[in-house]
Amino acid sequence: MGILGMIIAVVLFLLGLAGTVLPVLPGAPLIWLGMLVYGLFTGFKTLGWLFFIGQGVAVAITLALDYLATAYGAKRYGASNAAIWGAVIGLAVGAFFGPGGIIIGPFAGAAVAEMLRGRDASHALRVGWGTLLGLIGGTALKLLIEIGMIIWFFVAAF
Image (cartoon, rainbow, N blue to C red; front, side, top):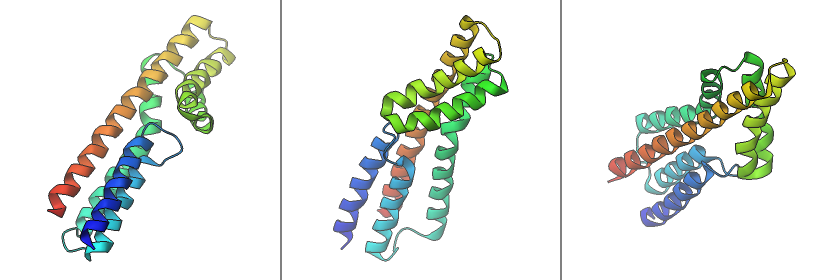
């Protein structure tokens, strides 16, 4: 049973990693689910409650990174609070349009919000660029955390 649990877990890990860049898949939650499935198949012999709490915290951090990194990038490049909200709304709306929407949504949301506040186009584009850089940086951090989650799993499981 442990082998079947491991196979399912690894498939969920791969789907989770793909979900970090594909909006239709919940990245880190899928990775956590893979660990839970493995635990169920093995009777939780090697994965205890502390392990799952720690992994749950890692999942929460990755979920928060989507919004925090985007907002940080926007603020770093001179965004107003309206632009930060525009970026967050753009990210949420863009998620419905695939990977391209996730890239364009926050950029457009921040830039449009700045222009609605009467800022010039060059400032709005700079803020949009900062938003995009924050999003890319956040995605890279999420991947690092998720890889760390998977490494911790294999260390704990064996």
